[in-house]
Length: 128
Image (tube, rainbow, N blue to C red; front, side, top):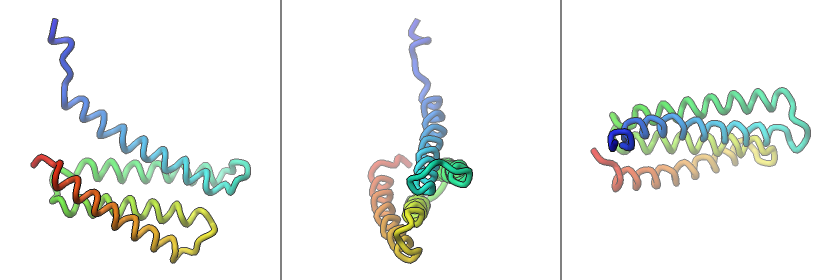
């Protein structure tokens, strides 16, 4: 009777490895498409931008999640910082009010903050 109630840890981890990048990619794509439409009606270009952005962000996040166990802590933190900083910089550039240089600076500093947070979390919470 207890065999049916037991939860398999590897199965739960597998679901998290897939659902977290998918949800993050969908959120990124939806927000990118919403920013691209500039408050008007949804256009084909905004929908395509959202779908492509969701696919690219989701695949990159999934790829980082798959290789992070085999990499040192600093490289994993750098990958997460690069992904997060470039995503925030790109979304900032879609707003239209900023220049590409300002969006690059914002992406760089957000990525630097993400590097510190990811490095801290991996240092104290990673089980190697």
